[in-house]
Image (cartoon, rainbow, N blue to C red; front, side, top):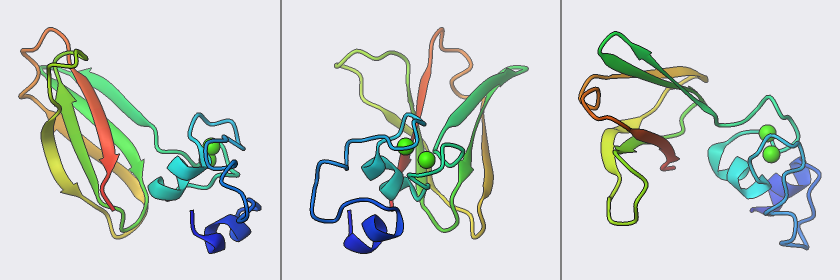
Length: 120
Ligand SMILES: [Ca+2]
Ligand SMILES: [Ca+2]
């Protein structure tokens, strides 16, 4: 993590030991919060996705940070032989707020896993 981020968030720029720590207990490590653009000292600030079925579609949503670029991916199982498939690339917002994706393509799968990746 850059020193400026560590100073601003009361972390130790002389130690890498705080990168895997979760100072605010939100389930995201300090380094994950750095890449996600969330606050490592505020448990309400975390990248967390929600999912629900709406009719024949699946609605996937998360709170986006302004100007971050996300990619939503899915797969039918978590076996190591199945790759993640890109559902929606290059998702971004100019202001922070909710991003929602409605997915009807995976509705015929008996099981589907989604993930959101922070691309930059
Ligand atoms: Ca955290
Ligand atoms: Ca946080």
